[in-house]
Length: 94
Image 1 (cartoon, rainbow, N blue to C red):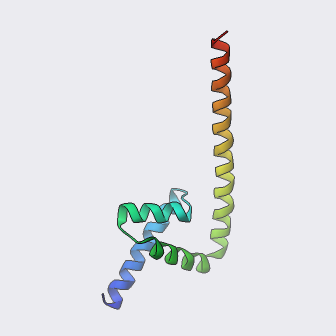
Image 2 (cartoon, rainbow, N blue to C red):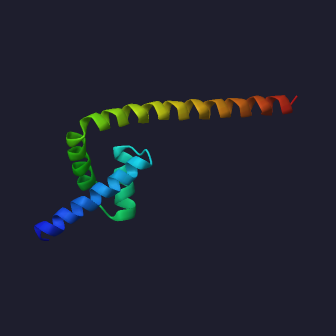
Image 3 (tube, helix red, strand yellow):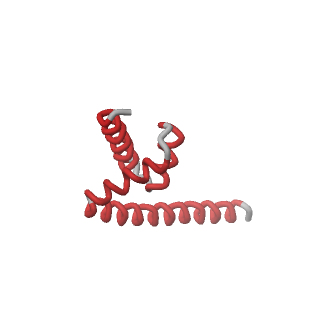
């Protein structure tokens, strides 16, 4: 593998990581997805992700906060849906 093809490969991994970010995936979710669907070793994805974090520290800090907030909202929404569903089931049983 020449240096040019290595650079192309890293660029490909970077592009796929960016796609994972568009889908609001965590680093671990991205590593799993790229391993499963693009045959990219998790250590490669992790290394490129870490380099992106170094180069774009502010973005990744904001991304982590946003992911945390959206995960909390999703959990609360799921909890509320399940709670409402449970209440409806209880009312139907009376």
